[in-house]
Length: 181
Image: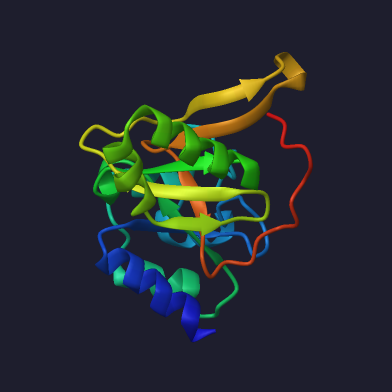
């Protein structure tokens, strides 16, 4: 499917580092990454040694994009942080979270709320992703949650430096409920 390669190139042209994602999943495509990085061990995505982390410090080449996306099997992941111009994603885990966030911003600072309304928002299987760029992007920060330990329910979190997310037009898995970490 040519659309995926074209989209990956468009993301890179917009200054965003991308990685291949397993078709229909959320994890990096380790087979595709092995072809371009030589990393043969399938580290877990959060491991600092994971092959996808190469793209936290450098943009993929066009040859790498062709290797990953020319056959149309992989999804696209966008790497956050400095490599992508300070990209941060606010992950809101349910539709109600977006509404609550917008209401809270409006009560606190109307100028900030107005700026936030102009940010790109993508609907996900469970909630929404809000994208912004910052000069010093944070990594993974839980903004709102309830419960604790194995019963922690994350309602909102940032994903920036050292993080990635599945991006359109990638097929995504069916949502799980509730989302637990």
